[in-house]
Image (cartoon, rainbow, N blue to C red; front, side, top):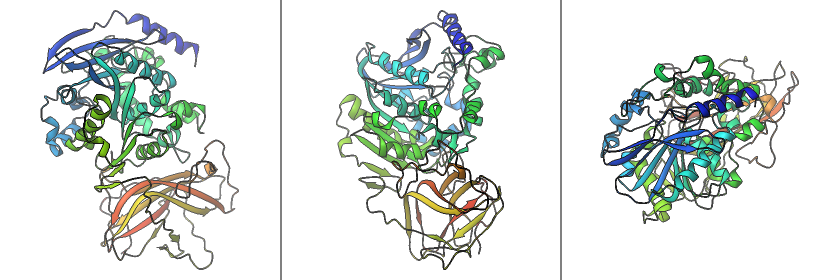
Length: 541
């Protein structure tokens, strides 16, 4: 960390202590404390809004700390997502004015009425909180720890704090749970990646472009100091990323180069470890909710978290549809309230009878992966078929780098076939160069040859499963590798010897699909990432 960055942080912390005032009011059946101050151990003061019942008392706390500006309404940040949400799930508006809806976190009106205090924090350097922006860093995680302990000590708190939210908020929950804050009583990690290297910045050692879009669009756009160049709260009229309006040069100095840092750390090193959970330290009760359609960002973290966290009390739920849908739906809200009512309020919500694993195919299970799984091998054949019997003899199939590659397809399945769980591929490849990027896609087709895709977390045309590997990152971790889940160390490159066949084990992220009779599935081995080709037959007739 440079001295310049430290100076910027100290400057921001000093200049803003008197620029934001805390004030309270009663509205829409809630007592709201706007911009309450939470002092950090280095002198920076973070700002939060507290929504709680009008009557004085001690209430269970639901806390979220995020970089999206607590004053920016869901409806203004993502109008398309909001319109789709309320159209498909009109129950979202039941009993709520929706004025306080905010991206990826709970609607306070739906929780305060049930006896909760909801705390919404702007993380360091965003919204109304000054400081240096560095998402998922050790400093950011420590800030969340201190926010939890601050909330537990307030006169309106019963001392039990829960974390609940989607994506960024779930990822933060994994990390801070590793630090074991004394008053963190439960976490709901909804669609949250976990391993910063494997889930976020690199897939199989290949740099992922997710942050190149997310960081400027979602975070820099509401950096503290955007001020008059940004939006105003539809509730208070305050600037959502202010109050000061700072020059762009100042803002640039007050944030990390998140994308550049990812490029600068091509291996799974200390940079990524700092931004990842320590599973053996996570002991808090947890609900991990995965989205099958979140290929490439979240489901792996939720499934790894459920399997590897040391918590004695942990549950897994898996669903489909768009990234924001299930969390806000009546189904999602009821599930969350049963979980937190049990652990934060001691209520008889029936949670003690909750199945350990609840899959969105509406089947309850006792474990993950499923104990009754019939692990089945399929073999690649020279005629591009995919079958259960190994081919006769050896054969070679070639494709050009950065091309659509080749696809191996089964015959139509004779009876309904369920694929639920992890998938792995073993390939023997050679390249004319010292490295090769492989993009694997598990696909399903209807009898007419058209590919079956699903509404994913973000993409409306998501395939059944995806996997990635840079060949030079093929080194396996023997302690964590399982027959169905290769685990690569990503700690040193192993270049290919041009023209020499080399064995690769490739993780395909877990999936869940029932393939009807008459349908086929396929494994595509590509030289570039998957793109849905609308209107084109994806499988041979």
